[in-house]
Length: 289
Image 1 (cartoon, rainbow, N blue to C red):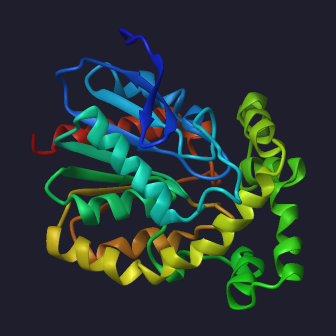
Image 2 (cartoon, rainbow, N blue to C red; image 1 turned 45 degrees about the vertical axis):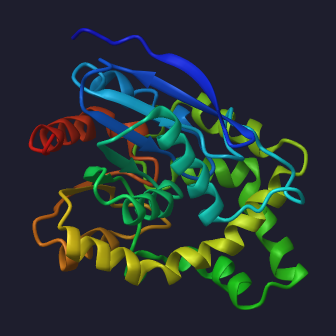
């Protein structure tokens, strides 16, 4: 298989630098990859070569993550609306007119907001453990939901454990039958960024604001129903955060959605990138230009 060269780039969006990975023919259909917590576009490092043989692949780092700018939490409003504002600016900056999106974890509420605001641009959606239904939320969300209900300092501080190296590795290993398939640089790089000075505070702000995503679920559902956007869910079925019923729920609003489960955890691309990549290529082939 011919492998496309990956470029590592930055562009200024409003007042901040957004880092992104880009590969594939410039005149090919575009696929925009949106990462989740606590990772970055690095999570797509093995998928990009699979897709970029035929597609123009672009994978940015969200503000506060990876190699994009991470302004201090007291000087930047870390909300999902604001993260989306910068991805919208990124899309506008690059002049992207039509594209498919792949979303994961935090990238899902950002990507779904983007789709709601730009339905004419979205050719299709691939969701890899990117939730949009309440039945997809596991009991592991309880401490975060407690913080939504009572944003006290105690409840905020209790969530700091979510940013530790032990928890990051737990996210990668849980539900994985063969942990030797997990590249150590994946969780190590995530933790490197999490350990930046006061970075945990911006993550706590985003934990709190995740409630806004759940509040937007009906808006996302309405978009799904009205657009009938082509949709593929590729789901690690042992994900400790986002349960299989959340994947199946897409069929309520998108009866033609394709839902595929894989015997793995949250970071399904770490263990099943070839199988998931094959499903994505099949899906992309049927999308409108």
